[in-house]
Length: 400
Image 1: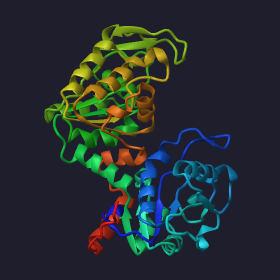
Image 2 (image 1 turned 180 degrees about the vertical axis):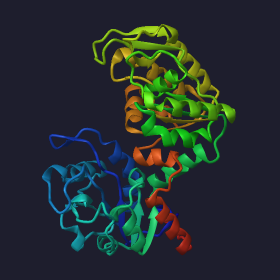
Image 3 (image 1 turned 30 degrees about the vertical axis):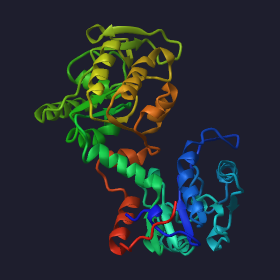
Image 4 (image 1 turned 120 degrees about the vertical axis):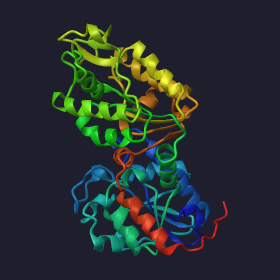
């Protein structure tokens, strides 16, 4: 892929696709993490003297209809504050946008445009006509072939990756293609079925695969252990056994729970009881890993060379069941390994336990992060690679 920072941007119309799909409450942004993640890209283009147009989606509005609740107006206001200069919101942007060198203009929600989600060719051409250089900096949307992520990259005069996109891919490649070993993956979540592809894909790469949440319960039950009324996919027991057999055959380890923290109801005020797996009762709900299991996982993480983390190992939203995920987070923070973490619940746990500075790379992506782990082709990345290989111009380094 071509890289934005390797191109001469001065005076150029630079169209940057970001993921500014931020959470809103009563029209106010409640978490600006995604804005801050994309900010260095906008600032770099500004410093280079580019005419900066920014694309993003927000929510899931009906195409062809303006919905004030899905307007990017709050994002424009927040960017104005972060950049220290006015950021204009252009509503009728497809018909052309005036933008001075060093100025940043935010185009209204791309999902208001008919054909965005279906990657309409005509819409993509209109987007491409707005720019001299298209920059995709939104890795979190890279698994979607849409007009603003894929189609526009086909028709723009030059299509390249932004710094955030490059950083995400570089970190994932480091973790999965040439990892320092041992490579340890942590996959938490409620169901084996929703994470089956990532489990099977990682199985061929990892040295240890730590499973948590309902996934761990299913693996535990597959060994014949009692799991009570815990979240467990009984129709996936054979699949769990197959995965464990495959891991054993290639010398990889899936360490199972030896102790757990249980409750009698899925409620914030239910009492927590720590017990060995052999002591689980038919009316118990497994809500977290126990301290012995947490210690075992921490030892594995301490000796790891690379850690990939997607998903908590317990109901960390409830204080009495947060100990396992907290211990895991602290072990990752203390490990000398290169660590990469992604997924909404994982980011929430990182924030809750205050370890963001100790994780080597935190991915802002959810679905794209998982699909990359599964080994799937990400359409928005593939088109940038194709354009880069086809054109391969001699880059002119932009002064920084």
